[in-house]
Amino acid sequence: MPTRSRPFIVGNWKMHGLIGDVGHANAIFAHASTLPDIDVALCVPATLLMQCTGRFGPERIGAQDCHMAQSGAFTGSISAAMLCDCGASLTIIGHSERREGCGETNAIVKEKAQAALDAGLGIILCVGESHETRLSGAAIAFVLEQIAQSLPAISTRALENNHLTIAYEPIWAIGTGLVPQSADIAAMHAAIHGALCNRFGADADHIRLLYGGSVNGGNAADILSIAHVDGALVGGASLTHAKFAPILDAAATLAKKA
Ligand code: PGA
Image (cartoon, rainbow, N blue to C red; front, side):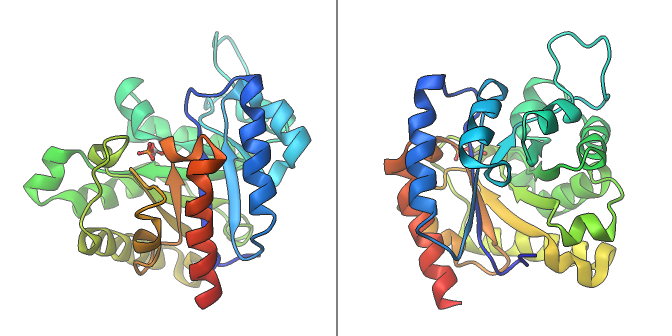
């Protein structure tokens, strides 16, 4: 099982991607297969899951959300079991665009995370502060509280299988071109790592901490070399091979040096 030392670079396609765009995923995974020291996944829209898992394999394909119920009268929603049925192996949970835009509280995020883990999916649990919280000096306390409130109980076995990844994504850095100071990313990731060690002991070594928010080919090497940054969750720069490849290359270069 990969431990934290193996970089994990995940693309979050959000509500982008038609069937005609699967060619971008093809080029991305062709490139990734030349980089044996890193793990690469794409979280694609639900409409592309079947096609992508069939083409690229389940371990490389994730979803972006799931409902907390197994099934039922929830028009328009998709359950964790349905994601598994499509061959997905992981899903993002609690992205700030869902916390903010869809009213997902920590309690809802926790239920969704539980449902996904129960179905056997890996989760990428997203946390991150607003700009106001950052300016107030309470960012670390806020994020640690988000983790405490939205992360359900998780078995040692699930941890050993790398079913938990945490993505720190400052809301104000997502899609804005703004990136925190390296020292602020380092402080946040060290604090999250410390909290996970307190909660899970040595098993915290299986939990990779991703940074997300305006990662691109120009800043990836700097961000990925920060202590306790084990990878990146990448939105806009994951949509094409041309933009994503330099990020994968930066991760692979650092992994080789480690
Ligand atoms: P961005 O998005 O890389 O476009 O800032 C990151 C994310 O929301 O996961």
